[in-house]
Image (cartoon, rainbow, N blue to C red; front, side, top):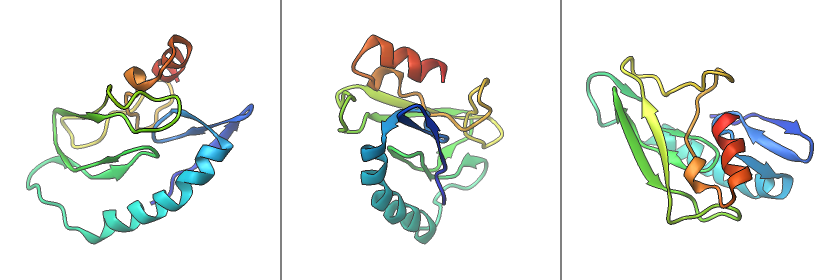
Length: 126
């Protein structure tokens, strides 16, 4: 599984998470992405019926999730994030992860994770 990134001034925006990361943070996460990506391929899925596939969004791993449900977990312990807050991901009724309406890409709601109001707005709308 590949996580693509694009440059936005001095920030990287992960397409599958939309949370701005510095270049240093992105490089630090690269080995973690490779390890998690391999694990995602090794373990069989446990759900039958319609569900969203497990995935790594650049900051967190998300297990397979039944269609039409939300899943939450603690925000990652990462600079500028509050690990006592919750990140949320929604599995649509068709078994596809929620796509952000503006970016048309899979999106995880890290809004509450951001430690400042400005960062929360950036996460919410991009």
